[in-house]
Length: 311
Ligand code: ADP
Image (cartoon, rainbow, N blue to C red):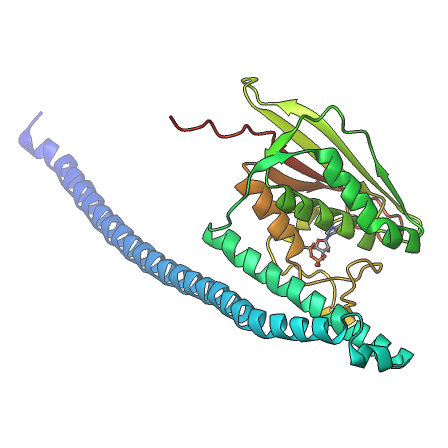
């Protein structure tokens, strides 16, 4: 084969190589552009994230500041009302029925506001990780008896039934009794509120062990025959200020049917459970105010142990 015969093939090869080089160059430029665009998007997302975190911080700071500012004047009004309504006070002795009713209304309103301020403080403490627990030995049965007593009239008023199952198998728990009462009170008041008249609320507890059998837990379940929770909202309701319905339609009652509140109860309840090293979640087939499919709120708390004395 002569040199001449080889030439066209060589030319073709050179052309292919040149085309490949051009393609490579195009690809390099394209990937450079992509990398630049990606870098820009990352910067934009980082900035948006920082802005969101800042807004979130401002929200927490505002709630904290508002709660602190409201606490003092509310405590003062509460104190003055206490003096005004103390037995034997001239004002009460001479007051007619209407005035007594008006004062009762003011006392209820102030109590509710103080409850809201307390919730706002709890939410900010949980977010900041500064919620302090006072651990002590606690009998679950005593907490449940107290809850049964506290809700007796409300449950009767709504023609509902509150069943509290035997919990004698649950050992003494090393928890913050007041905080656990707060969680259960919130779950029961929701179970009453989101349950039609005549509905049932049931509380049961079972003892569980961790996989390595070393830690004991109590699982407390509050079940109701109420409207249920939409499947896609079962995490959202624990996030704070949750609102499914129109805020204009609110009745702020803690126990009227569907009388919504500020949406702070469940976030606080979950926060308190988590500070104990436990958890709280809901199980429900879905929201249906006609069929009332019900909900089960499961609270897990470690039984805990008294701290070992330091030597
Ligand atoms: P709220 O003050 O609105 O009751 P919560 O934080 O206690 O605030 O509850 C948040 C939302 O979760 C409620 O507005 C309600 O939509 C839903 N929810 C809570 N408990 C129940 C329940 N037992 N059945 C149905 N929905 C519930």
